[in-house]
Amino acid sequence: MVEESNAKVFTFGSYRLGVHGPGADIDTLCIGPEYANREEDFFIILHDVLAGMPEVTELNRVPDAHVPVMKFKFRGISIDLLYASVALSIIPDDLDISQESILYNLDEQSVRSLNGCRVTDQILRLVPDVQSFRTTLRCIKFWAKQRGVYSNVTGFLGGVNWALLVARVCQLYPNAIPSMLVSRFFRVYTQWRWPNPVMLCPIEEDELGFQIWDPRKNPRDRTHLMPIITPAYPCMNSSYNVSTSTLRVMGEQFQKGNKICEDIEMNGAQWSTLFEPYPFFEAYKNYLQVDIIAADEDGLRNWKGWVESRLRILTLMIERDTQGMLQCHPYPCEHVDRTKPCYHCAFFMGLQRKQGVPIQEGQQFDIRDTVDEFKQSVGMYIFWRPGMDIYVSHVRRKQIPSYVFPGGVRRTRPGRAANLAGRTSPGARECSPKSSNSPALDDMHEECYSNSAEKANKRKYESVLDVVDADKRAAASSPNDTNCLSSVVAVEEPYIPSSSSRGGINLKHAKILEEPDMSYAKSDDQLHHKKCSQKERAEEIGLGTEFSHCPSTAGKYQNALVEELEPSVNLGMVLTTQNGLKSETVQKPILRVSLASTA
Image 1 (cartoon, rainbow, N blue to C red):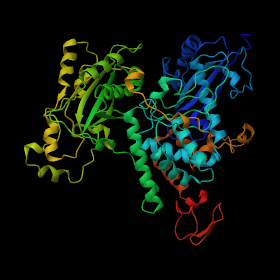
Image 2 (image 1 turned 180 degrees about the vertical axis):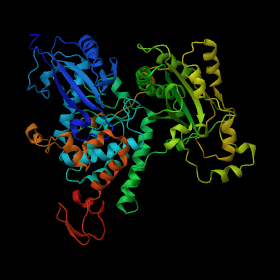
Image 3 (image 1 turned 45 degrees about the vertical axis):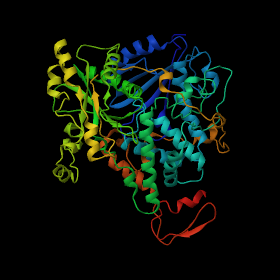
Image 4 (image 1 turned 30 degrees about the vertical axis):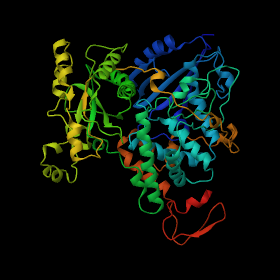
């Protein structure tokens, strides 16, 4: 049996869907026999084998993740490798993982790992037009990354979430071309009444007895804010990470995208406007800066991954401790000051008072205990090593370090000097502390390897900002400005609130199992010819295979997407829609013509 033992590797996610983009990971699943377990054979033996291969770099295991994963680069290509041990002594070459019998006698972690592939295949079966789906999904994923809402770990949405949202729009408009699908995507989700779930097919139960998403039976499911349900059994909510703050941010971005698409329909804007990067560091007056430090490169990579996975917990804790009055916007991009010798990176979180709430005189947000709790929890990292540290500080917009901006150059704000010159009243000062209290990177470098309790304690209290009565002063000059904060913001770990602390949500259960039209669902045979190689996928968007390894070609990627959304049509050409309507083009038909295609 040992000689005949084997394993089989499957791909899933964006690579399997055919929408692999620049810098994206390749999601892979290793399926092994029943006697090869995850804890020892995968995370220890296989890990050591990979560590000894010169082609493998940046190897990192995450055994305690919701879906245990081993991350590494193979010849420069990022790989996320999952593992599932199935109830078979030998893995056949023709193993069919679409059958529910493959889930027999598996633990929940193996089921989640297997469902990565099963969900991907189901999505391709359930969309009416695979090619239109792929084009639309590439556009939406690129938009989400540009707007800072592409990150499952931070509390936004990841690849499978966006794929499910796009697939549902494709079901609603089965005959639409990609330009219309992109426009309708923003219209649909601007108007969607969360927490009503997004589903591609009815939720089904099975005799295997795995728990499925059902808020009528499971109290924890009632707390989910933005349920996006996977189509493969057992059906789960793929977006359980979404918080009140991240849902608010995504809602604002949906509305912004919908407005741009409406302008495009009226020829008042170009598609490139939709893909403009989000000016995060101009959107708020107050930020939390989370600096992550380690003694070496490998330590920083592992420590950073752990802290990043806990940032959404910090968001939940701030929501909890301020009763939702202080809104957070975690930004999923890391920033590095490459002029400093210390191994470090930084994440940022925008802060603002809840919109539409009257400002009370002298009201403050004291989150020192919240940050202390967060920092203590982060410090429980089982692979912690000396040199790993984290600092959290409150910074104003003008204190944001220059290295976060493109080229290290801060963009000037029009009219800023004139506005400052016009402020003569002490009561009209901007909501800000009197001095900068964020730790300088030079100071952090000095303390990278220091265990001095005195220095650490000094830093803790130096990083506390107390903006006394700032709201009162700001309200005198700008009563409608709710970005000003009166706060006591501390610097410091993760805490996972109970489901009860997040508040229950009453769902309209009658609509949860509403059955979509499945008349166009495809079989495996129908999908067989749709599969294409990596080279073909790159050629679909007019780019070479080297594109996926070169993030600097994002501009080319955007141009290719825009070209797909703006098909060339000769002026004066008579167009016939699928409903038999005819119209003569007088200009390049971006959306105006396509809107009639599914009327």
